[in-house]
Length: 606
Image 1 (cartoon, rainbow, N blue to C red):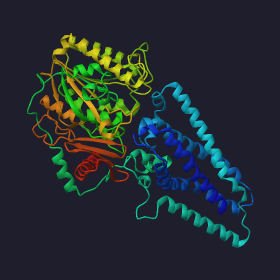
Image 2: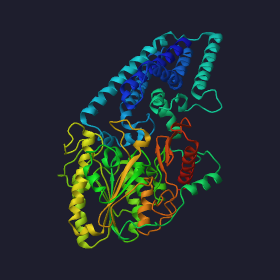
Image 3: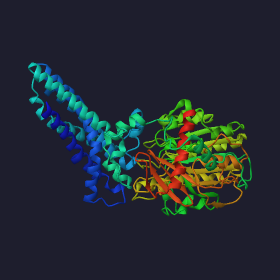
Image 4: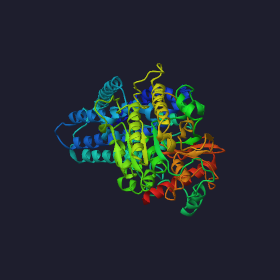
């Protein structure tokens, strides 16, 4: 029995040390600017060993119990049981390893419970990739699953040697072996320290990619099941009085601007949320010069905010930051919490209360990430999604192409203008997203940048058409990204977080570049302030043109971590290890922790 247990445990351990981790490192080696030396790889293996041991302990637990039962019964069942068990574990492990390895270039974080959201919306998730990629992925998953099951079956070689206990002595020996084995597995899973193990056992470097290489993907997933969506009491690092006092200094509350940038208090608003629009594609912000020529040109015609940090890494969080002025959470997504969403501030609702006709338009599936529910809850009278467009409209993997959607929006604006309506329309784009297939080919050698060039072209055509209509005079167009884009190029968090914000239209008094540092969540209060609309409920949104905006900063969250940026620089903190992983600074880290503690305290109450 003991030989079987030890052999099986060691077999599992060798799999993660010599198959899973090397495969992950080799496949994702381009995801870091740091050189991976053999010495560094050995460190990954050494620090990864602890999380590997934890996972192997979980996997070995059931075989230990099965082997004990085999010692008590005369019927030989352990060989057959282990074959079935190895197939089941092979499927789970092989799938986990393949998904973690293959999707890391897109996600930039380890496998965790958030993958379950994509399982629920599997059809939409598959729309994110091309058919050849999907076929390759399925073949890779099947191959990895079969290989893992065969490997584990080999580790079960000594299952047939488990004896049948005869007499009191052998029975007692079996019981003692069971107790010692279970105790050892429990100790390895929990750890011997005061606090139980967590993923930080494999975190050792200030290069987050190296830590991700070391961390076992199955342990990352298992651990996230217990902490994902934890809200109440999360991220407490100081007493309430200190937190509340310092938060009030960072977010001074409702105020009105000292300078008016618009020539009207009641413009019609076209709020365009551009999928993954990063400063890296905008030449006017120091990015690639020829990808978005229309944004570059229009930046000279409107209000161009040059130092905006997105609040998160994914659309579901970005929507809430923009339309609720609410900070993104690093371990959960409030958009999935129906009861709490209804209690969030609502930027579009402010216009609805003034009698505006409000609408949200998206060429894709509105069921993904509760978008339809969220848009309606935020005060949109009408929501237009993929199924509302004629079936004859050309579609991509995610839905109707943005150029076609923009044409539809133009026609809708003309209709409302003719009817004399005041309106607020949110448009969420989708074309600048994997698999980067668009009906446009100006940049032939790079499908990623070409997809952004396509949306830029469509936007430019929409703006030029609107300029020649009566609608332009009272129009405010707001263009910004839902989050940054790290695909196809490694970007540190400070560069990933940088997104454009452009406001243009006849409602803009005069062109201007505004270099004030701000967060994505500040856009709502800034616009409302310009319109003279009170916004005290937007506690995480600041009017950057008001006299109360005395301490400019940006706040960005990623998977269980955050970045805080002010005039002195930026600091990136990983919450798993509890340490700064880039540009450490005690003051900036403390301010970020104040915001995080207050954010989760507020979310728990909503």
